Length: 267
Image (spheres, rainbow, N blue to C red):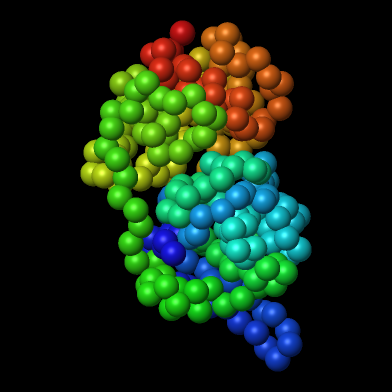
């Protein structure tokens, strides 16, 4: 088992008699209040569900009843599963992931009072179990330590449609070269890329400079920002899909090609 998130437990799994009060554990980031922190697969498995188009305040359920926001469910070979909630996933339904592989980045979607990962462990019948029992069984301290990241450079990127550490890092570097990002390049310290406000804001300013006009007031990379990204990539002749705000594989593959070709610059 791998720690899914660097931080500490802020709310535990809870039952009251036969009533399930809180179906998992909440892990708040080590730097309180921060978004865009990497989330990792606790166990290997296949992505059963992936939701990436919800926005803050949306109370609908995308993965399981009463679970809100973006996130993913990964089903293990033994039939058990884990749910990762309030996460912008970098994985899609059907993907096979290894233990410790990046699942996505914490975001502001769903019902939450502050940034955190909501993490659940399910039995084979998808009934929630206490995640801390799994942590104890495997000798893992919740929130303590995550996989080290490679430092790069990573160009040319593998064009695989996954917005994971390598692609995020090379986008940081390209935005920094174009004077749209002055934040940390986490890979230089062998840490995983963080999709924080500086990164997102810098990318949005870059898209505005390319006359695609996303909503710069978004504190997350939402549908309007994705449409702006798709518009820019369409103008480059790299994206041939629908401008629909869905940051799926085709969009990320086009972005990876733009990075490989050195085309992240103001036209």
